[in-house]
Image 1 (tube, rainbow, N blue to C red):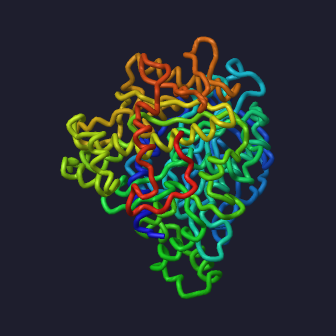
Image 2: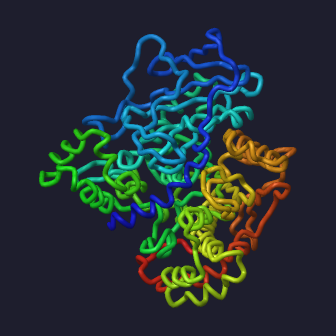
Image 3: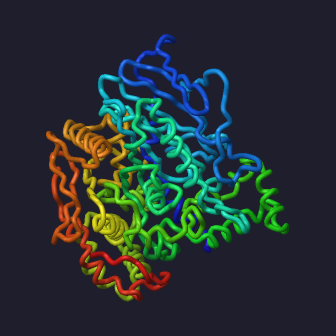
Length: 559
């Protein structure tokens, strides 16, 4: 495995996955007094949260034991029960990570496998209430406490947000290491199992659990849909901008980055080879694998975090073990997943964020010459055909031309393939977030048009004052519609209820399968395949169309 390639891909991609983190919530809003404490008994002991006029909040509840020392890179283990009442009024530590401009300060903590529970006021929820478990994106930074779930709780849901091991701590592999590349997935399954056992004590229904995630989090859900360890732990799923069935043409994430047939998945061997290469400088090499692992487990967190690119190099999931026995993309394409209701979609301009972030927003505009070179790199002898379909003069800038090409070829093609795979077998609701004026609140210079960018829809569901202070009235209405759809889907398995725009199922057998277009004052059907020129890309998808790519046998065709 080319570690440099993987690290660069992840470094470019990860910046978008946690956009909501730029404005981490300051909880709670309502004044809280000592008399407002709320105590709940979990299977590990009593926890005390905070009750406000509108919600009850529990934070930093451990769902697994500390993955440190000999338990670094091991399956999550049970929590040691405690005596007395554990304080759950403050967020727990973020899992070990480096600093970033969108997720705040670094964290050296490994004792971080905690979750947060937001409970609606009794007047706004049935008992037991439907449950939504949120798996955050990125995979190398962030944490569950950075997502404010009170808007969803206002709709009557009990919402659980989860920490899981990140980067090298969640995706590491090494010769002889059982579970290589799957520790983040195992953590998430441990959290879901905690929900099954304990959410009833918080007023939630363990028989009605929806798991939701964006980007890396949605990719994880693709894995859970195919993982034996996740069976029965959730009953519906929301996958926002998921990459579970995406491939990547050469250069899509930057010059010099080759094509890759699976954006998210790696073999166990690839991940183990990366582990050997990435840790070669740490003084543990030269021993047999067991001694090398003991050496690596004894290193301080800070020493691991200091290895360049090590967090992003393991921002993937490995298959070929008990956790993920097979390539999830193949399993999904063959329809071998639970018959549960699914909501799946993406944003209209997914790739604008990556192009703007790498070029225009950092003062290095993407030029027409670069567009020509990028087309040749990605599509070889088909470059002129793609250029004729996407002539640079049809776009305000070469950057937006290239962003559109990659959005259509990589993101939309993968999103549509996923909807087709799901829709053939189970109730599926496809969507496209299309607010091209969605607030961009990261500190990018310049005036690049990010459009309906990757992860730009997250603040429309979770509270985020930094974004929502810029909402127009129409955007507030759109946010309410999207949140209402999510809540009703979590409650019933369909996003439809009286008072909301009708949202038919995605049926691949129809000439135009229904995709719900979500934009201010414009909610309704869109011909997603036509909008993203998927017929053109289907005609171009011969095995030899992309030089430098790995063979794509067994890939599910777009239909």
